[in-house]
Length: 87
Image 1 (cartoon, rainbow, N blue to C red):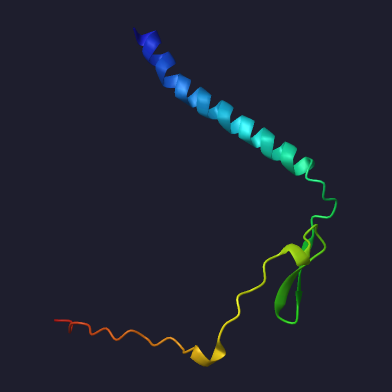
Image 2 (image 1 turned 180 degrees about the vertical axis):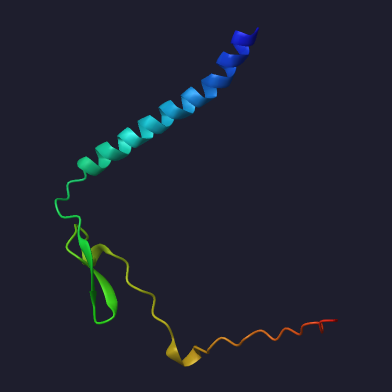
């Protein structure tokens, strides 16, 4: 009876470990066969950080949304009244 409980307790752990190892193997395989020789690097220039190199095609990236600068207002702080602290 105790052996059955022990096996029942170990089986979920073994299954989770096997699944994690399989997913890790798939991730390593995918990265190794991604087809990009240059992973790129981040460089800071004039206070901004930009990606240099890599296999990203800037033409395929979505453009940033355009904001209407006339309707932009600064955020106002919330006015929260606190109860006075009693000594």
